Length: 235
Image 1 (cartoon, rainbow, N blue to C red):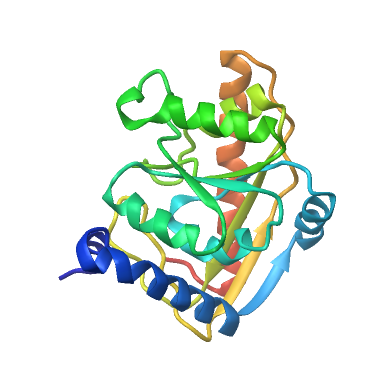
Image 2: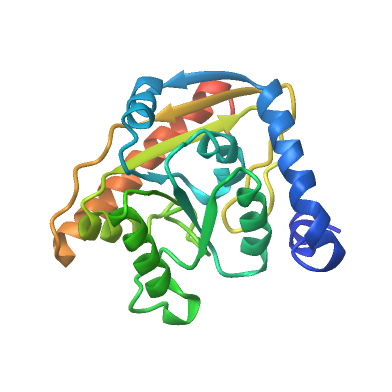
C-alpha cells in the first residue's frame, strides 16, 4: 500500500481510533528531536503574549508539522480542515494538540456549499468575533497546491482580524505523491519555522479581497521557499 492510501485507511474503523494518538505521539517525538531554526519568532511571540486574535495560514502540505506550534497557542483556536476522509484523520490528530476543528473548504463559499465552505467560514467568523483565533490552509482542500483560495482573505475582511503567514520545513522525511506534495518529517531532523508580518486587513469588496488573496499567496510561497532553503531542501 502506498503512503497516501495508508493515511486514508486510518480514517475509518479500528485504525481510525488508534491512528490519531499514535500519529500525535510521533509528531511530538519528531518535533522534540528536531533542531529548529527560526526567522520572525519575535512576531509570533508578540501575538501570543498579547493574546490577540489572528488567522494563522500555512500550506496544506505542512499541516502536521504545524500541530505542535498551534498547540502552544493559549487563546481558543479552531483549525479549518477539509471535509473528506483525509481531513477526518487530520482533524482527529489536530484535536490531540488541544484545539477544535471546523470541517469545510477555503474556496469561494458561494461555489462550495456542498463542501461546507460557507457554513465553515461563518462558524470561524463567529469564533473570531468572540476573541478566538483560527488556522487555515488556504490551498485546501484539493488545491491547486500553494495557490491560495479566497477563504482566509474573505474572513480577514469580514472579521477585522489580521492574517499571519507561517511556513515550516524539515530536511528529513518523504514527500507523498498527493495533490499537495504532503510532507512527512522524520526524527532528528533539521527544521525551520519562518513567520511573516501580519498582513493588512483588506477592505470589504471583491477587488480588495482578491488583491489580498494574491498578496497572501505570494508571501506564503516566499516564506515556504525560505524555510526549505534554510534546511537545505530543494525538492
